[in-house]
Image (cartoon, rainbow, N blue to C red; front, side, top):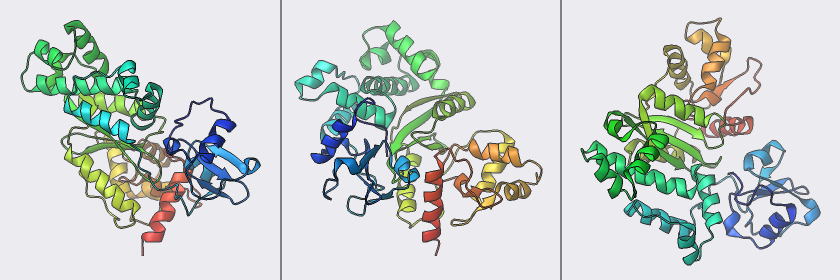
Length: 355
C-alpha cells in the first residue's frame, strides 16, 4: 500500500526471509501474493508461509489487485495498519515539543536506531527525509514567530539555526519567500492520512481543505507548486488545522461505509471553468455514476467533453470531490489519478453501501 521500506534493489530472498520471520517492520512495504490461492497478504500474515515457488511480491496492494489478486481475510491488507513504530513516534513527539532539536545519524545510533530505517519511513509516509522533516518543523516554528512580529534574527536563533544567512537561504528555498515577507503569505498546512487504499496527502488553509491526493500521485509536486502560486502560500507541516482533523474523521467514516456526504469546508482556487466542473462533480450522488458527456451537458457545455475530462483530471481533492464517479459513455472505467484499481474499488464500495 505504500512505497518500499526495503531498498528498491531488495531481492526475492530478502523479501521471502521477511515474511518467514513475519517481521512487522515491513508491514506496508510490500505485499505477498500467493499464486495458488489468488490472495495477497501483509508480510506478518499469520497464515501458513507459502512455498517459495508460489510467491510473488508487489510494492502495493494496488499492484496486486491489478494482477488479479484479492485481499486475505486473515490479515486484511486493505485495512490501514498501525504505521508509526514506537521509536519513530517518540522522535516525532520530541521534535514537536522542541523543533530546535537536531537528531543526526550518530544521535540515532546511540539510541539503537538505524538512521536508514528512519529515513525510509519518512520518505514513505511524508515524502521527505527525516532531516528534511526536522528542517520543516524548525521553519514552521520560525514562520509562526515571524508572523507574531518576532525579528528575523530572533526567529532564526530560537528555531535552532546557527547562522542568519543559513536561516534566510533555507527559509527561501523551502517556502519560496524570504523571511521578511513571511507574514504576508498564506499558510497551507500539510498532513498525511492513512486509508485502506494507501496513504493520502492532505493540505488545508484557514478557509478549508485545498488538496487531498493519494501519496503516489505523479502530479503531486505540480499541484503543490500551483497552490503556492495561486495563494501566495507557504506549505508547512500541519499545526492543529481543524479542517484536516475533520477531513480525516470523515474519510474514516466514508471507508467504514457510514458516510455518504462530506461536510469538510473546501478551498479550491482554480479557473472559473474548472470550478464549474468540480462543483458539478459534487452533485453526483453517492453510489451513482455519470459520463463525461453528461457532465458537459449539465454545465451547459455539451461540446466540451474533452475539456470536462481534463478538468476532472485536475481535481486536487480526491474522493471528497468525487471525480471517480465519472466513467466512459459505454460504462467503461477511464483515467483516474489514483489508478483504475482504486477507482473500481471506490465505485464498488459505494455501491455496496448505497442501500
